[in-house]
Structure formats: structure tokens, C-alpha cells
Image 1 (cartoon, rainbow, N blue to C red):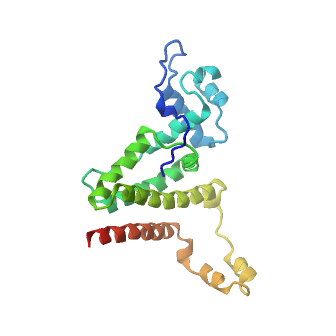
Image 2 (image 1 turned 45 degrees about the vertical axis):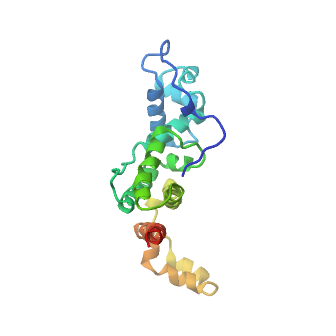
Image 3 (image 1 turned 90 degrees about the vertical axis):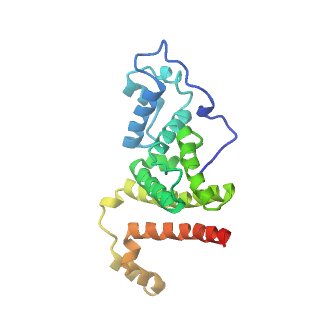
Length: 233
């Protein structure tokens, strides 16, 4: 999802030269170490002071390369967009979009801090723009207008982002390692007042995350396919 605030962005300025700074300290090195810390501890635990200590540098020296912590996170977020496999220009839109959305979910679980930052920080870095641009060509060839193509990709990615965010939060509290909920106790609690809910608990499909994800993805993409079909009719 593209979000552009009426504020400055780290991508509007060029990196400052590293002359006079500690050997090996650069914007690239700072971003690389920050991403390691984000993967290990999350966004709330990242500080410029801790990052400087990890790099063996004075905290103020980081600001020569990165003006603020928010600017640093903006740079880190864009690095993750660079991990997306981009579709070929002649790719069909549906398989290309499905692959991109599966990658989004995978990267969100691999880098939970990244999915939590989507929408909170600007997504106008070169990697984010390359990802968005790569889907426009196949969508336009399918017959959609530029606005409809962009809105279609945004709608699908919004579903996947929300799904992956819930998964990431569940995993963060140890949910993936916990035993499944005691469905019998839940059923006893609600059987009389909410019988339909209790009946739903007994359906195995409810507890299959892969199935839920594919069902939701199919629903959203089916809506786009209907629009494309209407334009071609």
C-alpha cells in the first residue's frame, strides 16, 4: 500500500560523504546492522545509541549518514521491498500478482517489524517503487486503467498485509508453539447462546491458516478478474 505524507523523506536527499567518519561506517553499513537488530528485537527496541554501540561508533556519528531514527527505519523498510521477486514485463497479471502476494506474506513473517511499519512510514524508496511499477505493466495489458491497476494491487496487498500482521502478532506471543485452543471448553461456554459459532469450531478448515489465506486471496483476485472480464466484454 502506497502512503505519501506531506513531510520530508530520507529519499529526497543524497547520502552525505563518509570522509572523516570511522572506517567502515556508511549508510549501507548502518542500515545493514539496523536490520539485523530489527529482525532480532523489533522496532521498539531499536535506538541510535544501541545501534552505534553495535557498530563500535559514537552515536552522533550515525547522524552524519542518517538524519533521524525514522529516516533509518524508512531505509530499512525499503530494503525489504528489494527482496521481492519482480515479475517479467510480459508476465500474465494473475500469476504475477499471486506470486508477489505470497512473497509479501513470507517476508512479513520473516521480518515482522516490516509489516508493522507498513502504513506508518513512507513507502517511496526505490525498491518499493520498483515493486509497484513492476505490477502496472501486466495489469495495464489486461485492460485496466492506471488507477484501477494501482487500486487492484493495493486492495490485494491490503488483505495480505492484514492477514500477515495477525500471523506475525500471533507468532510474537508464542502462538505458533502453543497447543491448540481447548475447543471443548469454548463450545461449553457458548453452546446455548451462540450455537452457530460452536458448530463452526468443529470445521477443520477454520483452523488451517494456509486454506484461509488462499480462500481470501482467491476472493480478492476473483473480484479483479470480474472487472477485467467486464472490460473485455
